[in-house]
Image: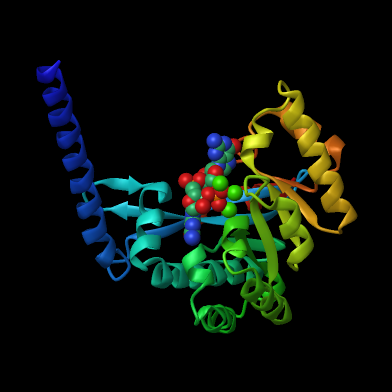
Length: 279
Ligand code: C2E
Ligand code: CA
Ligand code: CA
Ligand code: CA
């Protein structure tokens, strides 16, 4: 037993070293990724259930690492949150998304909005309002076309400050979305407390449709509450036609998910939009 204990320990130590090593490698190269231009944004369509049209997109960051290839955000956003690099990276995301949004506006694609994710650390940053208004004025994107996605835990960290900040953002004209709705500890409180425009139902509920009765009841209830509160509702993680039909029948405004399109480079999205324009 003693021998096995020792082996187990060695096994974990080795595993931890590998993890710690990857962590270090990522962290070091993350420091230079911005200046080296290794980030790009992919865009996932948001489709109106009524018309089937692409009416908006969510911008999602990608890191093209020279040795590791495409690193998904789940592997470096938490790291960037810890060491604060998310602040400059997030400022770049806003700038690039606004620039791209303006380009699509000028090209006449008729997109109504472009959504950008904000992390808790960015939301707590004193310069947030400054770099959002800079991204808007530099690009010339109309503020109402920019949507900011925040999770419940982000806004619940300092609820009083959050209300003030959200009100300032609304005064600037940008739209506010609550992301991953239903996964926080205070979903209903956050609806009551914060000035919001949109609500995104978490993928966890959508994936239960059509087999999990509870998920379907909860999804319908969220849509009903949102509509009564005059919030636009978006369902994320829509992968099947059954889910799409269910959400349309429930009165969900927009859907986003692999069924409608994966996150894709700007050039690919442009081809989708042109094809839709002809139809
Ligand atoms: P999120 O904001 O909840 O974004 C939705 C995630 O679900 C994206 O993963 C998207 O690719 C994925 N997804 C979309 N449709 C489907 C579907 O039908 N099925 C499944 N299984 N997944 C789907 P992604 O791009 O890997 O991003 C993961 C998370 O990283 C995001 O979750 C967000 O929290 C964070 N993130 C991404 N880009 C940014 C950014 O620019 N800034 C910040 N702060 N966070 C970001
Ligand atoms: Ca999001
Ligand atoms: Ca989400
Ligand atoms: Ca999520």
